[in-house]
Image 1 (tube, rainbow, N blue to C red):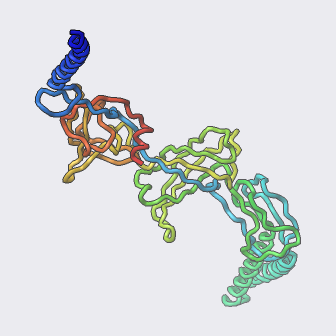
Image 2: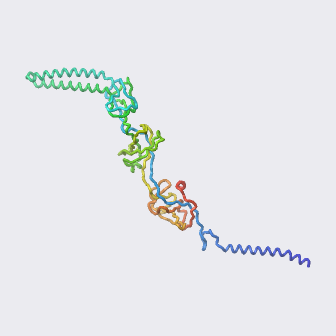
Image 3: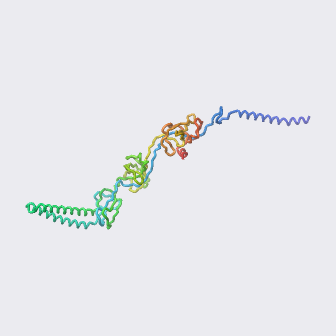
Amino acid sequence: MTTISNTTRQAHPIKRALGLVVVVVALLAACSNESPQGQRGGAGRTPMAIPVLSSSVERQDLSRSISVSNPVEALRTIELAARTDGVVTQVAVEEGDVVTQGQILAQIDVREQRAELARAKARLEEREANFARFEQLKAKDYVDEASFQTARAELDVARSDVELWQTRVDFGQVASTVTGTVVDRMIEPGEAVARHGALFSIADLSSLVVRLGISELDVGQLQEGQVVDVSIDAIRTQAPIQGQIRRIFPAADVNSRLITVEIEIPNEEGLPIRPGYLARVNLLVESYEDVLAIPAISVAEVNGEAYVMVIDDDMTLQRREVELGISRGAWREVVSGLEVGDRVVPSNPSEMRAGDLVRIVEWATRSETAGQST
């Protein structure tokens, strides 16, 4: 009896353990018959939402500008040349002096010409007296017509010689032909100069310009009178100056194939702009303001048709065909197919399927989409 009693007490815990195992197996079987949420596919299963970025369609300025630099120049600059050869005896002005039209700037030694002028004047007096005598004789019919005409011709030649040598004497005075500022002086007293040799450079500093070489691909939308921003390196503390396109040259340069565009800069008081300063001009060469734009990476093409993936209100993807315009860096213009406020997925649409359920994890910003496109 004692042996039977011990066996019964040992078997009781084993039965309890077996019972627990059966319960656990039954619970697992019951759980396996339930459909876990979050599984895609299969009858009666709820699809799992795909996390995506979202970019809102909005109007942007996709205009294109270029920046071109060149030195500032005076609108009109002349080189004053010598009209006779000789030695410079006097120079009356220096660089920076303002001169007026007709002002004497320098003197060239013309003593030889003065001597020739005195001789010509003396000959003229002789011819005048001779002609006066012939006139008296002609009135009394003491000389023939041919002799009288010869005396008249000799008088005319004498007068021409005086005028000639007077002009050459006047050439000894170098006078300014314009009103402006002396920007370069190429002579010093005592130097010998040749006829037509450059003596002074005089500029009209009241009108300053920048002449730029622009590609034929960019000059098409530029117009005379168009306002442009001009920055001068030498006066960086100033805000950009409002310049204006004064003229566009009619033909391209033969060597560079660039077309010259002349920008007029106002030389107002308080703006110490000088010729030679480097100017940087910002030119609007393509105007695309207030256009619909989306990230370029959100567009895919199949058989020449462009499309994007749009997120509907029920958070499912819809394939939307679009008509595209210009491309500007990371952005594409949308001509038709989208409206302001539509949400597109800023990633490759070919990797997605229409009807997929999505959830927006973050709104893509301009910088983010620009980074993805590069």
